[in-house]
Length: 508
Image 1 (tube, rainbow, N blue to C red):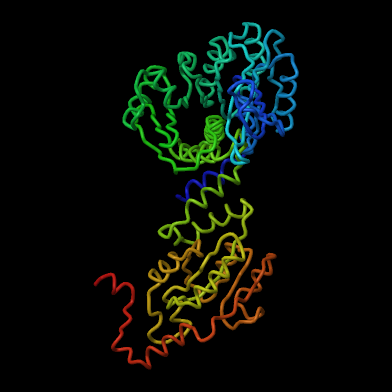
Image 2: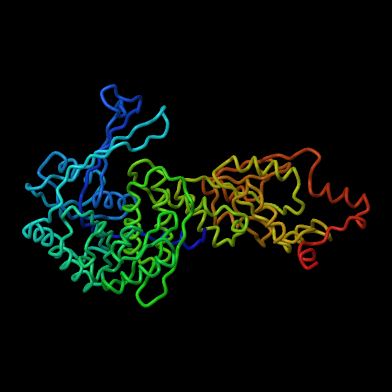
């Protein structure tokens, strides 16, 4: 995980995004699939609960609220109970519904999913029943929507179009909207309808079709990354787009841009429980990212994370910034990426604190890594969600009067050895004689120290207590210390077992 994605999440802000498209109400009927009916060869579902969730453009608005965006939703609901429930749920989420239009001639689109559990295990969708009409909205309804949107267009930093082919996204609505947004420099990103007419989206900033939608729109079989490159470029050329985000499920996203070579942004393999809502989550991430001015390739990587978190859930679940940050931080726990500069580490610690995680820090020379270190580092890691080890630089060790031949191993070697430990999340090298500067910058929740120190003898204690942190001594493993090991080696004739510095060993 690169640090720049955490930086981008940190600067998303709270932009105002307009969502327009087909609103859907999703109902879920949950129960145990216990047996086969005696009346017919069908599974009997013993219902134990029901729930309703927002779908389509309503879910995109919901997902954006989960990402802390300000959202206005424009669309059509019926004059029915489902329509009132959609409006109520949106209001609970904090979505501005002033641009919703009620059409008494059409029902609110509702999808009912029956979710069955076999032997009380993970639930799976058994059946879906849809109540909807798909004919286009009238000219009058389109004009009502435009009248509520266009006078306020300057309020929005991005516009998302969620087209589920239920009749809202017509040329009468989208053409004036896209043209007006383009004239004002407001990005418009479209999640296209499956098999829809892409001429409706001509001139938009970008589209986010999946494999099947891309193939239908271009005639290109998108089985390979190369084919996705070709198809993305064709979408741009044919429909006057600035970019195309071709979503490739487990293969991530291909980003094609006008006048540039396409790029592939792969994603991490995940446990997939339900793909429902993943496209909406990806669109929401594109919306808030475009509004915040995030560079498109970085935005694709964030969309991969957001969509990946969604497919790990059953049903449509709102993903928060905190969850995305936590996932980014979790993905960065590799030994090669654990050794950080103080500036890089500060950004990570800030993200972890925003994600509600507790940060532990310990410091020392760690010249010869031994069982005493392992034991106390494991214990230290249990004090919080992540452990930082701050190590003295070579110059700092020498100033601490550890002896003429100390450090035995150089700072980079010591850092890499610590980074290889499962209990350690980050390693940072400091050149000062005390850890005060690092403690003031990072402000860990807990400062721990191994050795024979009492609580009031731990260096940096006053800094940590000053900002409300906690200090904890960890003790020692009896009979084991770096100084004692060096003494034993000297007594055993160190000439016969030389201990070269790391830089000398690497050169050999």
